[in-house]
Image (cartoon, rainbow, N blue to C red; front, side, top):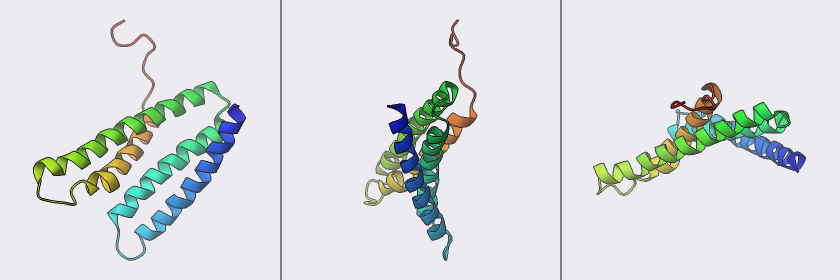
Length: 131
């Protein structure tokens, strides 16, 4: 069953990598576009996480690190999406395009930053801070 998951992760990594490459080319063709850069960051993070699992998913330590990076990406992505979505609603209620900031900019950038933090930060001790 793990082999099927690793094959699917490899396919996801290839597709996300292709999307990341297209977004990077689109971001630098003409003027630099923040929307395409945020899409590139999110797709590159997905491609990296899925590719890493596809290539090294048989090692339990790598699986644990991959899972931690995925949790960080999910949590920081959701938090930054919420700030980008609801923040403009609170600060400028008459701006009808305010929530698009969370959907297209802060959410994907938070996801990519969370994936990097999850990979780079050392794991917590098993006993926690209180023991």
